[in-house]
Structure formats: structure tokens, C-alpha cells
Length: 389
Image (cartoon, rainbow, N blue to C red; front, top):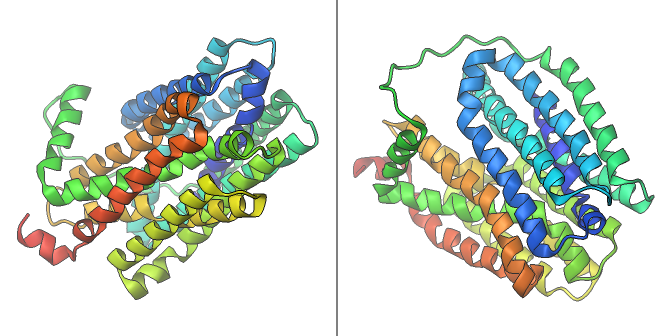
């Protein structure tokens, strides 16, 4: 499972690290990049809705294998579509395919990871997500090297796709065969009906605060994934290879935060840990926007990544910490997080076309401040929340 998470991070970061080159090859504006990312968000959301069906149809092993292979093929096609003689529509279609396959893989591997965690009765999910971040570090470093040495996007992403495909066949063999959890029969509902039922849970004020916490934190991560490299290149005038390294600094800090998050929370508690991290993330984001030299840009990226490292994992844990309806509450919070993660960054591209990429990031800072204000209510001790739920 660790390798599966790492492969997903590697494939995703490989594409993200070459966004500036793709923009230049296809002669795209900032708004065009935003529309391209909207296509990816649409594919990802579609994949999220179909992932449970794929898991029931294929099982965990085959579902993850086919998802990784789909990502590999789409990554190769994305590289080919990023050449100067290609079209915006072809690049968008390739990104839709990659995002669709990623979402299916992401859902299945997280469900399987959570089931494995329950079966061994040890905390495992933070380390799994840390390996996803390690994969993003590797992808960012390889992308920076490819940009620095003049390797074309098509050759780079073709090699990434081939590596992911080969590694997926080997990695999936070691996923443990766990007993299938018997689901409680539910009345048949359409997708919109299920979504509406889950979102109605946000009438619970405490769950609404958790949702607000997750929205700000996941947008902080998603905005960096999609825009930190372009912000460094366009906003601060840095070379493309340095932009890729700035992205690498962000994901490195996020990985460290996830690896150290467990002991931090055990010592200081959820509320204090979240408040401290949110303040670090906010200061790092503002420093990245306002920095006047390369080292301050890198420092801002490091603080930004460290501050956003635990928002989503802790938010999901808070949602699950309830005597009844834990699964529905987790699903509702996850929907809030995925919506912010997938839809928010493309919207920043539209705003960035008129205001500039760095100025558009002030929107992220504002939402992160709202998350900071929501933490005291979201992270109240479990027995207090249960008493009046």
C-alpha cells in the first residue's frame, strides 16, 4: 500500500512540475491554464462518483491496478498533448483522463488503507499519506531535473507513465487480501439524492465547522499543487527549474509535517496543533506572495507546506469521532475537502488572469483565516460534541 500511495503522488507531481512548460508550449494564458485545470477537476469529480462502483465490480487489487494503469496511459497522452503542435482540447482531454483514473485509485486505496488500519489496530493512514507526499517530492525533483536539462515534456511524461505502469504490476501483488465489509442495505438513490442527503448533515454546526476547517486547509494544499510553480516563475521571475524546486520544497515540508504529526498531536492536542500549523501556513503563504528574493520564496513554500500538512487528515478524524453516523459524517467532510481541492485551484486561474497569480493567492489566505477561526469549535473534545449532538 505504501508503494501505491507513492506512485500516485509521483505521477501527479510529475505533471504539476511541468505546468509552466506546458503553458509555454501551448501558448496558454493564465485563464487558459485555469480552464485546463477545471477539466481535470471535472474528470476527478466524475471519478469520485464512480469509484465505489469500480471497487464493487473489480475488488481492491484489480481496481487499484486498473486505476494506476489508467493514470500511466493518461500521463503519456498528456505529455504528447503538451507539444507545441497540439491543441488545448487534446491536452484537456488527457488531463481529464488522468484525473479520472487518479480519483478512482485514490478512493479505493484510502478505503483499503483504512480497512488495513482497522485490521492491524495501529495508526497507519498518516504514514500512507506521507508516502504519497514522498512520491510528490520524487516527482517534483525529477521534473526540476527534466526542466533544467531541457528534456521535453513528452519524453519526461512518457518515461513517468512507463515507470508507473511497470511498478503498479509489482506493487499491487503485495496488497493484503482483507475480508470484505458487509454493507448495510440502503434504499436505492440517485447520485444527486445521495449527495443532498450527505450535505444535509452540515446542519450540525460542529460538523459545519469541521467542513470549514477542511475547505480552507485542502484549498491551501490544492492551490500550492497547481499554482506554486507558476507563482514562482511568473510572479517572482524565477527559472522553470527553480519553480519546480519551490514546489518540491512545499511537498517536502508537507511530508515532514505528516510524519511528525502524530507525536505533535499526542503532546499538544488537536486544537493547539491545528492552530499552530494554520498560523505557520498562513505566514508562509503571505511570505511566498510578498517575498523579494529566491530564498524567501523557498522559505515561504516550506512554511506553507508544513502548515497545510495535517488539515485534511485531522479533519476526517474529527468527523469520524462521533458515536453515530461516523461514516456519513466522514463522507460529507471528504466531499467538502475534495470540492475545495479540485475546484478551487482552477478558479484561482480565472482570477489570476485579471489580478495576477500571486494576488489570486490572497483568496487562499482569506479562507485559511476562516479555517483558523473554526478550529476551536471543530476540535472540541469528543465528549463535549457528543453531549449536544
